[in-house]
Amino acid sequence: MAKQFDSLSDLLTRFIEAQHIFFVGTAGPEGRVNVSPKGMDSLRVLGPNRIAWRNLTGSGNETAGHLAQINRMTLMWCGFEAKPMILRTYGTARTLHPRDADFAELNALFPASPGARQIYDVAIDLVQTSCGFAVPFMDYVGERDVLKDWAEGKGAEGVAEYWETRNQQTIDGAPTFINDSKS
Image 1 (tube, one colour):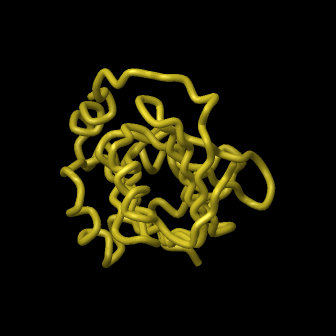
Image 2 (tube, rainbow, N blue to C red):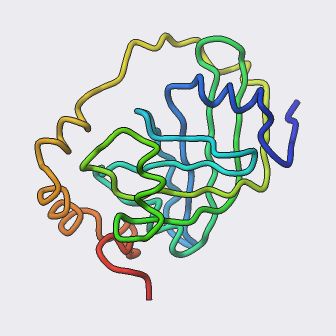
């Protein structure tokens, strides 16, 4: 049975902090819905109704483009290793790019990375738990270094060039505003 809450409790915060992967869901008013797995050391619970998620450079930039159109985001965690539970947070998010004043302060919460593309400052308006009884048991083996190594190999200039050539639009053609501010 699903349960809904206005905010994250200490127990739910500890559950989030124990997970090695989470999923983000966004969508524009039309086009495709994006659900993407996220890992690494990229999320901080900053309070009962606030999460900071640092988005690292990758092949797509759907979240930024979707939030520029409709500001709504769902984050989801699954208990793969122990207690069967699914946790979702629903809310809105402020998109911060490296050019924005508040980016550096929030970026300092995470390990240094030349691939840091955006930080989403998420305001939670609903928390929901459900049983997770159908979620399989899975063992955590470790982090992948591929994305970290790729960004470090590219360096800041190479990552910026990648943004210019690969991260300007969503797969549906919506702008992501990676290199300029929204009009």
